[in-house]
Structures are given as C-alpha cells and as structure tokens.
Length: 325
Image (tube, rainbow, N blue to C red; front, top):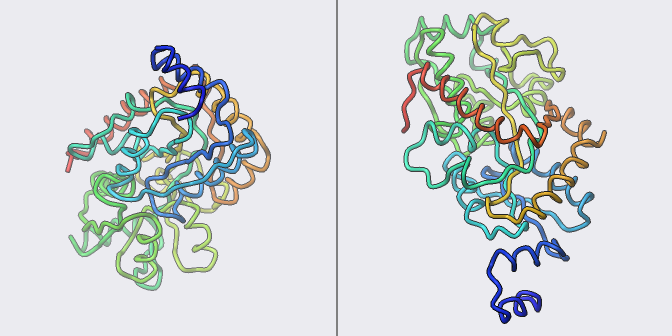
C-alpha cells in the first residue's frame, strides 16, 4: 500500500476518493497489462501488441501483452473484468468475446456491456474462407457448396470452439447455402490454421492476416472474404456476396476496454493515449501489413456502437437458428 493510500485511509476517506487520488499520478511507473483471450500469434494477439506498443509510446510506461487463452476468449474476459480497476489491467476484446459469446455460450460469467468501460475501437479485420488446395480441389464458394450438397456431412471445418466467429460464419454459410459440414474445434486461430495446412479439415474461416501469408506461398486458396468490400490485402478475392452468398457482410472488430469501475481520469487518459496511438501512420501501416484497417469510433458514439453490434449479431444468430451451447 502506498503512502498516499495509507494517509487517505487513516483520514477515513471513502474508496472513491482514494481511487481519485491514485488516478492523479497514474501510472506512476507501474507496468500496464493488456490481456488477450487467445494464444500468441493469432489476430487478437497481433492487434494487442500493436496497441501495446502505441500505448507505451503515448503514455511513457511499460505496456505488456498477457495471453489468457481458452473458452473462446471467455477465460481472459473474466480475468480482465475481475481485475483491480486501477488502470493497470486492460482488455483487448474482439467481437467474439464482446458480442458472440453471450449469444452462443451458456453460463458465461461476465457481461460485456456492464463489466467493461470502452476505451476505443482500434481495428477491423475481415475473415477469409480458405481451403487447402492439395486436399480439397475447389476453386470457388459455389464449388464448395456443391461439394457439401453432393456429399452431406463429408466436409469438415475448423473453429476456435463453439460460438467462435469461424463457427458462426460456417453455420451461416451452411444455413444460407443449404448443406451440412462437421465442426472441428481448436484452441485458436494458429492451431486451426495448422490443422488446415495438415489436411485435417476441409475449410476454415480464417483471419486475413494468416490467409495473406499462406496464400502467397500457395499453401491455402482463399475463396472469399466476409466483409462488405474486398480487402486491399487480397483485391482479387471476391466478397461472400460477390461469390453468390447474399447477406454475408461480417467484419471482425477489436476494441480496448478497462474494468468498469476504473476511475474516470484514468479512462480519459487512456482514451487520449489510444487516440494518439491509432492515428499514427506507423499503426495504420502495421495493420495494413496484416490485412486490417484502423477502425475508430468517436467517443460519444462508442457505447451506442457496442449496443448496436449486440443487436445486429443477435439478429443474425436468431436468423441462423443458432442456440447457446
């Protein structure tokens, strides 16, 4: 306990005043942790490391990334939500943990809208539907659909677990196109991608960062991207709508959060630091190299954006006939 906190407690001052006093000299040489709910090497981890580097430069304090993988990111989300709200523990939450998990997983022990305060959105990243051309010779989404219809249940697809975005995307594709494939869950993007390369699964909705590198080497064949527009990272690859799957416009976004009771002065400083970090040309260049784009939501619209996303994805889940597992 520092001297300021001891003195305030001795004076009988309540906790909110203590927190306000501590916020005045934040971070006071302390290390800031950015928790990530997935293994190292995946898209959320990569974005988190870019954010951490930007915050480190903007704040002038050590910022590290700590991976807490498992349960489609929920283990890390719970750890971040329950962390001391002192500005030293932050959460890099993708749409998966902040929107999809509450819709598709039973008994999760955190509430994305109530347990966190948004610092800001940072990036958007489309996924790509990919196959291993050495083990599945299809050259378009329609050929994949035809194979699935011709051989019901023969195709397999990788996910990051039940309710993960690749699971969601694959179920939507099957629902719209009218075929069935078998889900094979993995712990994250990296092991799922490895399984595709090994020929253990037929297709995968993988992050575009991984897809670009593997497609350049001919190890995977991208069939389509999930966003509304084509990705500048792969301009020759059609969108899902262009590939004949109407209504398939889904982006994977990332946002930085703090535990909900983090003092307002610290939240304000974090927002200022994040705004400076994501506005630099270096940040945009690093994202572009990974197939992602900066995605900044004005502070006044941040909470309404999160709420709108929750409603939109809930409608998609309902229309697809998905239920919590």
